[in-house]
Image 1 (spheres, rainbow, N blue to C red):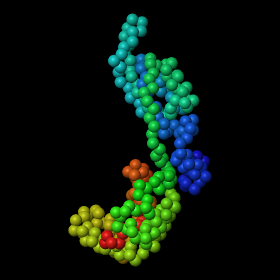
Image 2 (tube, helix red, strand yellow):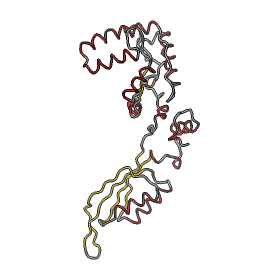
Image 3 (cartoon, one colour):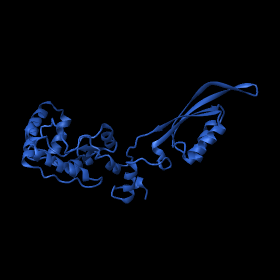
Image 4 (tube, rainbow, N blue to C red):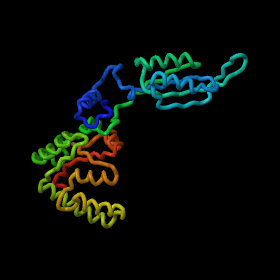
Length: 280
């Protein structure tokens, strides 16, 4: 079973993949998907020229990610007549130092008018399977416990301990598991209730009909209301049935890149803690 097919990060091959994704590896061990090369070839304009160039990529098992061609300003004089030449710009997976890429470049150089390797593009790692979100879920910008000095709960040891408890639950979550039920405390429910009642009043006055229709369903199916805080597991089931989106607990704020990586898999990262009670 390959790591790309692994459904859960608890699988031993997944653990190895996560380890590889978080440390630098030797050049020969790099996944060519994340290491790309750009090249410029000059190819004579004749029937079959493009197919011939592409056949070398197939023969060496190198994947093309971008191909562009345009007439060149150059003309070559063969047998007394000018011949039109095309510039072919190619981006492909892999880089020099990988045996099949070196063999490909050698063959392209031998069968094209000229070959110039333009650059080597390093593509930052990103998840290609939903379970790989486990590798980025805990890369929070503001740790769930380490509040800044200007945070209203900074000097409250009870709030900090509670925030740390919920952050730890989020850190332990793995893709595919049921989102844990949170037993919210009376002070947290009171804060939620105050915000909910005020927000609900404003929504009835200003929200569009479509929003209000969905909110009514969430009140009925997800426990939205002033007396209790809805659970992420209930919201996820509701969203999955209607949109195929899901929530995932997270300990704190993620970078824009990591947050968008989640959205690519229809996963919305969401904290489970409630605002500090003095803000009600």
